[in-house]
Image 1 (tube, rainbow, N blue to C red):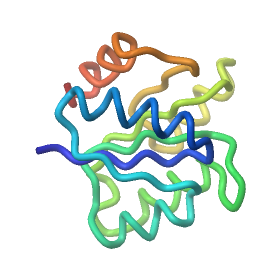
Image 2 (cartoon, helix red, strand yellow; image 1 turned 90 degrees about the vertical axis):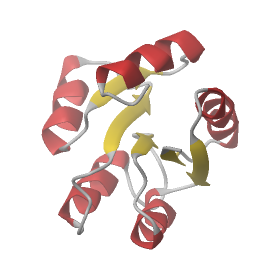
Image 3 (cartoon, rainbow, N blue to C red; image 1 turned 90 degrees about the horizontal axis):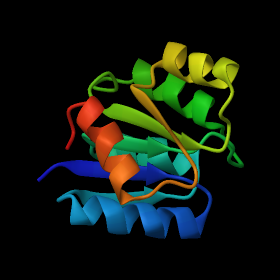
Length: 121
């Protein structure tokens, strides 16, 4: 079973994302900020990370930069899930190491398409 870590400060977004991902066959774990997310990655590197941009403690960009520097941190597919939808933000996310980008709010079908694009669905 593929594993996914949802890193988002919104409990509602984590709950909705978890429901969709579990229906797609993922084993899901959650982190309410990037610092907790990195600690969970250190324990067990997930196959997929669903990552929010704007969070307290550590931004999504700070998280992905640190993740990609860790041993095995190049392995997970990272999908940014955010309300930041301008080209500059998308470019910044991709250049920092993100594999894909999905706009909030998203639904089951939209997320499934994005996961297919990164080879995770």
